[in-house]
Each structure stands twice: as C-alpha cells, then as structure tokens.
Length: 344
Image (cartoon, rainbow, N blue to C red):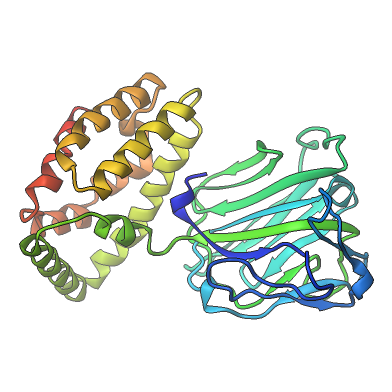
C-alpha cells in the first residue's frame, strides 16, 4: 500500500479498560460505543497475550462509531482487521456505513458502495471461494475500496479483486462494526485490532508544498492557483469534465503499477529516493531517479499509451484548453525535472 495515499481515521485495539473503546488514530475522533456487549466480552488476550480483543455474538451485538469530520470526504476506504479465522468462516457484516458495507460468508466477501456522483455499485459472492481460509486461529484481513477497484487480502495476499472504475466513495456519518444497520446480522467471534483509512484528501497539496522554495516561486504558484480559480469559474462545465477524468486517470495508473510483477522492492526504493530529494529541494537530482523509474516500469511492460483512462484525459479538449491557458512557467526547477518523462 502506498501509505501516503491513505489517512488513518480509526484505530481500535480493544485493550485496556473493558468496554472503553478508544480511538488511537491521529485525530482521536472515532471512539467506539459498545452495543449489547458486556465487560466480559472485552478480553485481555487476543491474537497475542495482552493484545486485547472484543467478542461479538451473532444477533444484535455491535460497536457504533458516531459521526466525525475525519471521514468527510471519504473518497475510498481501506479496512484492516486482525480477527479469528472462524469469524470469517461463520460470516456476517464486518463494517457498515452510509456509503459502504463489507460482509463475509464462508470465506466469500461482498460489499455495497455509494459514490459521490450519486451512483452505486456492489460486489457479490459469485464463483468459488478465493482459496481455503488459513488454518491459523487468527488472520489479518484487509478490505479496500478505491476508485479503480475493490479487493480483499488475507495475510498480505490479494485473494479477490474486482477491477473497474467505481468513482470516489461518498462521505459517511457513523460506522457500525460487527453488524448492519438493522442490528440483525452480527458477527460471531473475536476481533483483536481494527484500522480504517480514507483516501488522503490533502495528498497532492501536502506533497507539493513539502519542499523548500524561494519566496518568489511561492508567490508565483499562488498567482497560478488564483488564475486556476478564475478558469474554473469561467467554464465550470469544462472543469467538471476534467475533475472527473483526472482522478480516474490517476487511480488507473496507480492500479496498473501496483499489479506489475516483480518490481516491488525496486519501485519502493526509487519512490523513497524521489520523496527524499523532493523534500530537500534537490530537484536537479530527480531526473536520474525518474529515468530509473521509467526503465523499471517499461521493463515490466507498463505502457501509458495503452491506458485508456489516461489517454482520455490527455486528449480531452477541456484538459488541453486548461493546460494551455495555465502554463507552469514560474518554477523551472519543477518543470525541468519532468523533461525525462517525455521519453516514456
């Protein structure tokens, strides 16, 4: 997982004082409220001694998490839980919210999702189970919705994947852990740890400003942003088109790269190097790193010309019009470092 793309908005350990469910995420805004769970259902030991766990009972037991601004906007969701393998085998609703839900039954996974554009999508059981569940009593389950696809992971391996553009996930108010909104589809078994991330809505801005720049360059970018606002106000229809095509292209590229074989360690090392140089303002050294990245991706069969969503963005008249009206000519260190990418 590209950690920077996700922001942790909930972390429950179920350890400590029985019945007190504290959120350990940075915002501390997703504390849990037990429903039809007694103090005896909060155990000192989980997957490891002293790790803590909560024991759900089929029926009406659940944990409610009140509404929080930390989940607005949402965009996408990634859920990681350490739980009993038998809990997944027995089935039930894992996490439910206004705009998404994930459930399980006999090793299958299912889900329903509502997007910001007003549409909806669903994934069902279908076919055969992805593989036998682990024989270990505890497992690490990850369920992820991003605009380019939906997937389930067990102990670090992707076991089911539904590819295709889904759109950005709509925001949600509260969450229900271990049940659905009727309170009648509860889990049976123990959860040791639960983490929930949203797509980081500040990713591009945080990365872009995360380098030292001269005052004159900073003022120039501020003026460029002001001009962009003027373009958006002058032609909202065109901007709407671009704002739909841009994330679609970005997530499709990310998805294609994530599924390339045998590039993981090298890609990670080069990405870390790129981020280090960027944060230190050493942009003149970045072209060499980008050249190595391009060679790695090309060697693995990555071809941007064959990514339809990316080409749709680049060839869109609205995108071309906006980029022509807003040239980036105030930060040569930034523009020069991408010259190598023209060879892709």
